[in-house]
Image (cartoon, rainbow, N blue to C red; front, side, top):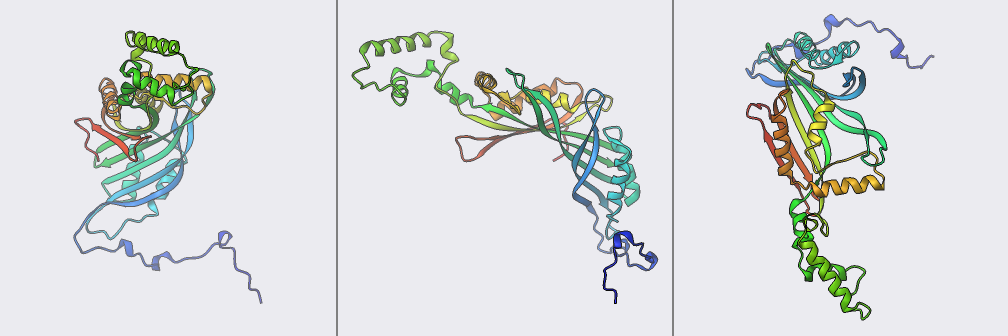
Length: 333
């Protein structure tokens, strides 16, 4: 007796699909349409364009949805990945190819309202500011396409991690704002013990004079005892002029420049010194970053509408601080 299980992956199974039940294709009598029905949490390889003309394969988290009319019980879900496979085999995902893909999905499932989102890690080689050490820097990006009838929208999203230095903390700690008592209290908490007989009156007078001189110069407005820093999470969604290719690299560069300082994949000590000082001299609240990104996008004629969300992961508070702003014409959640 042969008890071996047949290898179904290599065996052609004859199936009479005409007699298989197809419940999702039966009518629904409740009279309620659904905004979106489809698939999410789908992993799929897709190719996108890089600035300069080359392309790169990325692993995307995909969402595909279509509106469901009130008379239909459900969509034939297998048609969504079928469309993905056919599109991914021959196409580069872009503002030019997305409408063709959405129209194909719309025809397959019989809907005039189709939504697709491709979210992926995009790597850009980034060099440290002092040593030039280079490594791949990840940015979480997304392309979203929405087709309603003949109306098409293409949304580009970038997510950037940058540094934010608290302006209030910096201002309070500047030498020009520290009294002699605070200055010596800070010194005494460190390596110098002011009640030590070895510390002479001359030392006290010298430090006091230096402090007084600093308060009266520009140095006092720049040097302090420190300021607390945040990791700033910046998300920008944008709709760009369809006549212009807005490269991910350019949008990332524009947004990143509005933070206190960028982050880098590799930092040696000279780089860390430079980045820390850069952030200290460019202190910004989350509100400042949101406003500066908004103004930068306003000046860019290639960007038509946008949404900005800043979330600072606070270092001395048990919560995050967020700021949000959108352009007047932004119509998405």
